[in-house]
Image 1 (cartoon, rainbow over the protein chains, first blue to last red):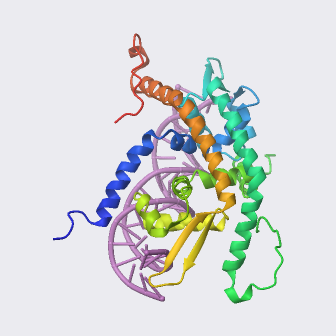
Image 2: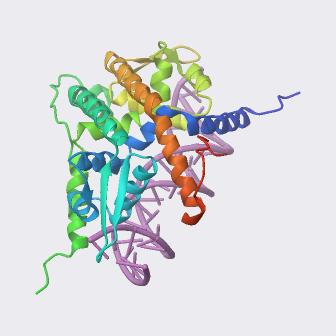
Image 3: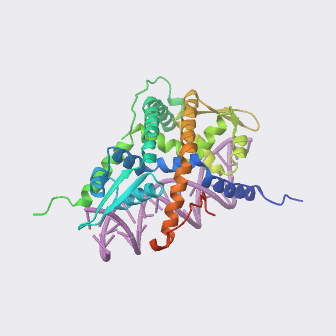
Length: 152
Length: 152
DNA sequence: CTGTATCCGAGATGATACTG
DNA sequence: CAGTATCATCTCGGATACAG
């Protein structure tokens, strides 16, 4: 008789288990947090000291209001930033890194450091790969690396 | 007369500029790469040595075939892994970390290390925040931290 | 000033079926 | 064995309008 579960079913179960695992995995949680497009920007901006919402909004001009608020809320929830409301008219809200949030800064620097040291190699590999992809294998014979990092 | 561009328009332009910036920013590229759900798993698995596709597929049982292939292709494109095809019947394809890819491992360890040292604080903050959110402010008076890290 | 609420389109991801 | 192709879904993020 056939196995009780198909390969697809087993994979589905594995996924459930893995998802549950992810919910606890510190590394994944950290990666999910810092890899967020706006988090790195916000943390960087706040590394200069406490700032009001409007100032952050101006500094991170490319971030929509929705995303900025959402990012700051998440960071607050995780205990990485504080949100201080001063009741006045108009309201004044100031954001600041907590000690925990400040601890994140060196790590970000480490990542940045590695990136600056090695990402050019990645860029080069990427360009080479794309060049090879773009044409038939026979075409790529004598060819110097153009070292073009970013197309377009 | 009103300004030539509205605030919304200005923000849109800022976004375009920022997107262009992101395309070059090494840090962001690195974050985008390593934060990928499956990349960390794949790199980790390959850190044990070269492996065939089928073996990877079994080890990363939670990853769909499509995603595994896509992940490996991206890593190959970035020069982080090699893909070696041995013409035979059936075909044999082996993946391995390049030296560049191996250089990524210590960085991942650093991230993991930070995560293991600090993410429990984040979890605690998160739980506290969620507890406060879940009820009216008046309710939270005398209450010990339950230290429940993961709900559900 | 500092947000919240709603709608909507684009891209990511999984399931499934098919191929050299 | 090692993929590729296609379709359905689903979440994210932006635009916009409204509110305390």
